[in-house]
Length: 447
Image 1: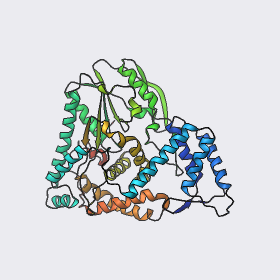
Image 2: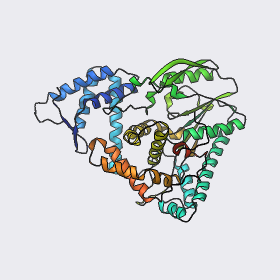
Image 3: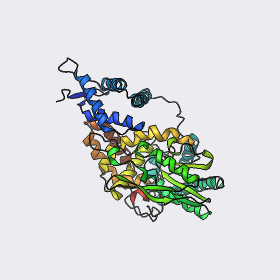
Image 4: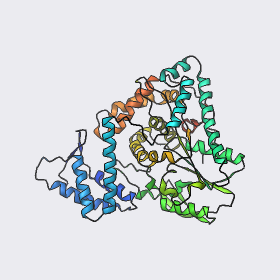
């Protein structure tokens, strides 16, 4: 029987002690270096608990930092050096992030595509869409149709510019990668870019990297039963890299199939070989992650990154968070197409964001082109559909220290949507819009 009942968080909040959190942290570090032995993680957790419970104080309540110190000690002393290094590096990274946030460091980030952002901001100012008040005014004065037309036109220009850049290198390319964080609009953009490239005579062969997921039993899972599919290590990166290099070399490969219903990967299901004039087309969350295309010359790759780079200030004078737009998008899409409760999406989002900050954002500036997938008008549609839900979640999570991240996001989005004039009729949204990927009604065929 475990004697420790509670843990002190960094905020000072006291929460129940759950050994599964230690196991998950160790297992995640192991997964990052290629290990997938959960039983070993559980055994190491028991050693950590034994050390913590050796404290003679009967009312001992450990601090989270103290627990992490013990985890490091156990990993090192039991010979798990590579796992210890991954754990220490991640812990140090999170500590630096907290310090910067607390100090409100105002230096420009090297991971942000500033030139593209300034272009988007300039467009927003010209169209009176750089503030929530501006958007509301144009909706109230009957200009919603124009706002939609202008927004869609800007997205199409971005697509056309990206296609021109790809075609300029068509003789050397063997791979086009369309990537971006969750719910950035990769599926719609891949279809539309692919159509234009085919019209220009390029022969594309799509490779679905979702088939390379590890079996569900090998994914990290938290104490709430939530699996983390968001990390690049959820994919068999070694096999992906091997198959891509073989395809580029003209060799035949046997692509697996992943059955999401049972969480199991079935090997050698589809044989594939590229003809000399064919180019691989990939739509992947982790397309910029170095290990995925390691050893493949950048000269034969075109990496297209997309993000809803909305440049609009709310009533508080702060720019709207791109991640909040994508959160709402994913909620709507998951509810419509995957029978997934939006509340689960909110509770899972900290995994999404953590992986983005570690594995996607640091690689943005390796992209060859960037597309802005934000539609300023989409906020008005989301306000009509989701405002009440976010207000409810903000109230429910307010005093729950175990759901602090969910509360902060729900509260922030609830305020944002309360500022925006809602639009209940989405009939003006084009059927091939990136927004349709999330609200439904698309004329595009999503496979």
